[in-house]
Image (cartoon, rainbow, N blue to C red; front, side, top):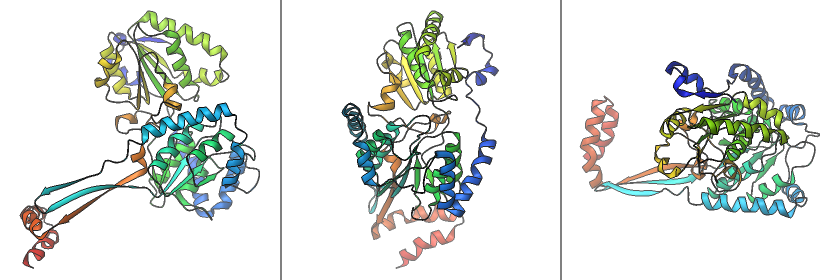
Length: 428
């Protein structure tokens, strides 16, 4: 990783400094569109064809029965069961406090308004299962869906071979999912969005995936026959802000842990100390030798960089412009600057708050906005699985009280039928 001094960078080059790996959208969309159209038109036959080609599906059976999930979890060690159960409990505790922002107000005499949250009935959860089976994603999506009381929770995850991963099965059972299909990729997104024979379409799709899954989600979200999605997404990322109080070995480990997600992941270190930057590079070079996914990590580090700033405030300004998925403040007394953080998916404070705990078990959700979308999106929450409906009820007196204002505005907009809907009631 190269050390770049911010003071030597021209303002016109700052955008390039904070750029992310380019996504070849046009090329990917051209690959994904025919898959979506085929599943949309031909249904299950097309889905199975793609599942055999891309997922390694061995037969025509795509649904994993509840009994199969229960059978699979019996092969899970008690140690891993205990770890998943702890993560599940913490995620539940954190998310149970969400999703109940309902209120009622009388805005003026006789005019009562209120808001009610209701669960989205049918939700689809995409759980990646390619280079790594993401057990944690099942928990991060399934638990808030369950707390929101979604009527139907559908999971799609590619299964290599015939048997589902025991840990994934255990997590699915903890989340009380209703349907589990062993398909992945763009074709799984198509099934969720459009439905096929025997599988009803969902109303909203959640979950991360590779560039093809992301493209498929984007395309179905703008198709009137498709469905909503949680958020736009790109490759995973972490930005660490560190001063001399940080531990170089900790920061190196954090950067590497994010880099191992994929070759297009991005990690950035912003520090006020050149000495610390050099020590971190040494630690990265030492630690990378022992990683089984080191080839992926090396590719990721090509997109990564270390930026040297003159102050922590300057570092935070850069971070807010970048808007990272994960932000680690490995600085002395990080609480003093958290009010200055305005663009980030999830923030980790101090030397003993590694991003890994948020990925798995602290309780917060790891389905977060990437690729700069933290400027306008928050992470997945219970509210993501719900929609708010507003209500109003007016008495006769309330209608009289508000009528003049409504009529004047409607007439100013030249929408006279709107005004008449008030006037006709007043005459009665």
